[in-house]
Image (cartoon, rainbow, N blue to C red):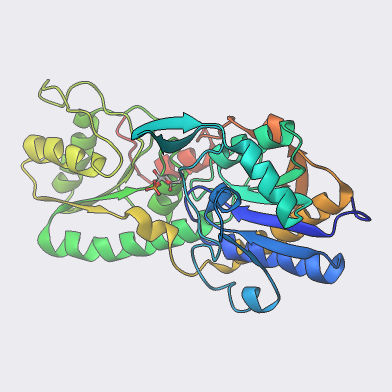
Length: 360
Ligand code: F6P
């Protein structure tokens, strides 16, 4: 590939994450400086290869000054799977396989190989494209840090830092008003952000999807603290927590989705403790802003390594981090396998030893 590849495409898919621009910079710099390739930026995930006017040639100028920027300069989407793309035909919405168009456009643009940066969904699409003959390599991305193939994803530590700073601020209102403060953080399937930010931000209770809790135990901890003279408690809650069927008074708990779990919990805690409860949903604040130094460096390392993978012709692979070193693995071995918090891990034990309750 190193002798024949003269032009690579790069796309970012799924939710944005701090550090994406560092990856783009790493790919572009390595491609231009190490390999003398051209680089085409594909906009808005794979949409850029389906519709006209959504690609641009990336030069040194495009990647200047982007290390500090959140988001992605290429744009992204978490819709638009080319294998099942929603289009309107005869006034009706239908799903169509647009990959022949994608491959055709790729050829027309002279793109020899693609670097796709994305979460599990994007990697699944990437793997299917690879199986259809598209030379493609992957870079894993999620602030949730829940991909088993890599010990860390860029964006995670920035999200943890942002959440920790928010929790630090929440403490003072809780203490001043003698309130229970609930902070809902991201983490649809795994509690990594809640656990790390809860530990760093000195939460009193951390609730994560991996550890089943009861409302009674949560309230016991709040009331126990009150008896010790602590009028306020801070709860850090992952958006993916699974509520028990009933609350402390045996009443059914309504279904709660990400964005509303904090409020659902607040209702039960208010009812059972009689305390004043306030909720802060951090939401996309955790995905934005300037990446911390680690995420910038990891993004750059992943980007350069992805360009190296293309040069080696190791298609159908993605870059990952193992024991602090950049490695590679097959896409098929990486997709659909999540890394969740082990309830007996040292992180959870550390939290318990520090007096933090998991509502158990
Ligand atoms: O996968 C990362 C993530 O941040 C999840 O924790 C969150 O539920 C999701 O993205 C939200 O994505 P969006 O609102 O962009 O659809």
